[in-house]
Amino acid sequence: MRRTIDWADGAIEILDQCALPHEVRVLRLTTVDELIAAIRRLAVRGAPALGAAGALGTALSALRHRDEDAVRADAKRLADARPTAVNLGWGVRRALNRLPEGPQFVLEEAMAVLDEDERVNRKASERAAEFLLDRCARRPLRLLTHCNAGRLATVGWGTALGVVWHLQAAGQLEYVFADETRPLLQGARLTAWELGEAGVPYRLLPDSAAASAIARGLVDAVVVGADRIAANGDVANKVGTYPLALAAARHGIPFVVVAPMSTVDSQVPSGDGIVVEERAAEEVTHVAGRPVAPPDAAVFNPAFDVTPADLVTAIATEDGFFPLE
Ligand code: MRU
Image 1 (spheres, rainbow, N blue to C red):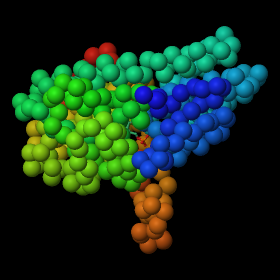
Image 2 (image 1 turned 30 degrees about the vertical axis):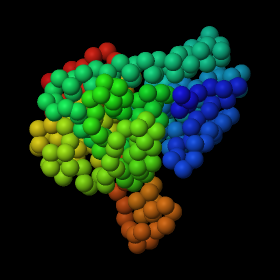
Image 3 (image 1 turned 180 degrees about the vertical axis):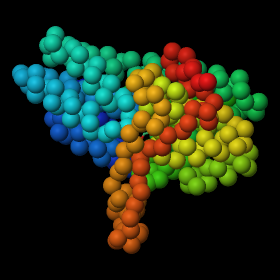
Image 4 (image 1 turned 180 degrees about the horizontal axis):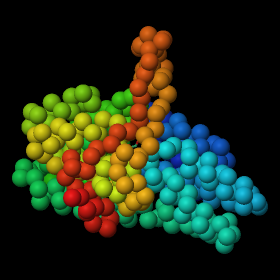
């Protein structure tokens, strides 16, 4: 299966997530500016995929410039392209650390980031699948997920959807409820597409219907990815995740986060220190390019929210369960 992001013949190739699900289009990015623009418009997105983008972008710059300062300046611009997913800066730093050895070593490190991605996410999601099989009495399982934490949000495999692939292979999955994920519809455009391609039975639902689906007993567990996990276990993920954790707690079902260790930010003590990206008003006032709100409507459009650790049942990583008090 094609990787979401890869290095090919001296350039970065990404599956254009703005074109899905209507068109499977590969974009070839030959400059750091093109990559930053692709990150900002979410043509490449999802925390682990952003880690790979940061590493490959740094390699691209190292191979283009002789001047180390120019590479470091590109690296900073890349790391700052979006503020919330910690993986972006992590990928940049990993690649940049090899700069003194020469540009080929920067690329080697970036390729190591890509190669590790599927392995660690398979491990983390397998751990989460086993946890759910242990915790939930009903068989087969009915899961609810938010945003896209699948193959498209990683280099391959996925995190929350990795749990789906494991359960499906084990014959232990009944269906997935996929939140559409307003306003940019990563659930409707990307998760529904991935589930359909994999032959997983799913139902797409408005974000606002998720709590009532849980209340009606239609969901055994909520499974999501993460963009940044603070040292105390608070979890930043796509806006709309926190209400799912509240609903899961109210109705006594597990709320499970699946993420690689590269999503843990031990420098940030709690969710209060996580910078939440604010995105353009047009994402809310317009639908498919058409205005749906008064032209002067004031808008609140945070791209992420923070779920406090006490609402999280488990955080599964490749190294084990992240300690929650
Ligand atoms: O704004 P996005 O689409 O980059 O947000 C992505 C998410 O919130 C994902 O849930 C998260 O990155 C985990 S992906 C494995």
